[in-house]
Length: 314
Image (cartoon, rainbow, N blue to C red; front, side, top):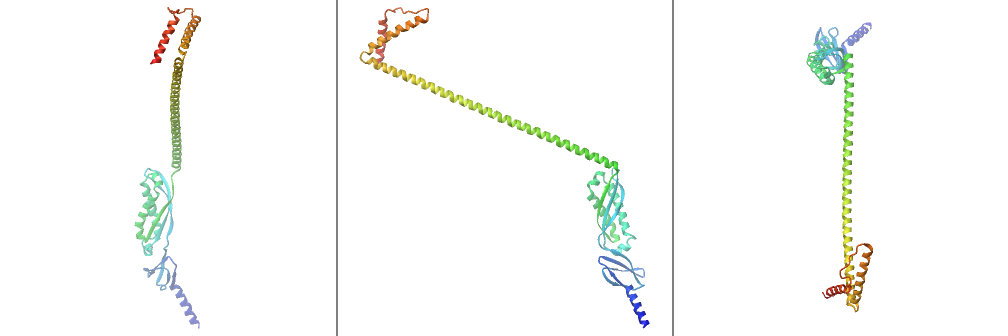
């Protein structure tokens, strides 16, 4: 009975030594008598106790790893404090175990060396502008070398670029000067635009004022023309009315003369006006013009009568 119990215990011990459960996304490296035997992936595996042994294991997931901060010198001899983070993945567990004694240290050292080389080809300003280019160059260099280590470098990211304090102060002064310059330019452009707007407004105002004055002159001219036309028409109408009145008077006079006793009345009226006219001249002037035949008033009236008769016959 005791012998059976001993056999069961010993069997259980050997089973415990020979059975291995490999987790998901993990790889075990197995050696037999010190020589590589197999790579175990996720699942249950058995080994021969005291013959096989698990010498190494690897995480097959993407692994982030900090790259220690270091001093890099740029092309224009400026020192930069640079640190970053590296993302890689084990793709060949066998090479990861036998390709390098410590692939993590190897990757870290190569990342630092490559970063110094890449930054050394750039000037200070470019290092801040072309971070993506630096990251790509580092990944390309690491990926070629890491193939022998069973590792795939996925990406590299620069976390921080820190220049010396004096460079930071100079950069701050430059940024401040650039902002002030842009502010001055913006103010100048604003003043220029304001002057342009004022000049444009004044020009438009002058144009409108001149157009208004021109229109006013046109209106005044049109008004003067119409007034002169109206005045001329009024004068013409007045002349026509006077002429018509005179014609009517002459017609009435002609009718009066043609009537019985009209000629004698006209002779009397002419003689009366003749005498009255000379009387008025005597009142207004010291010098008086007297016709040579003043006494022959009847002869003069007779002459006027003959003229009237001739007009009447015509």
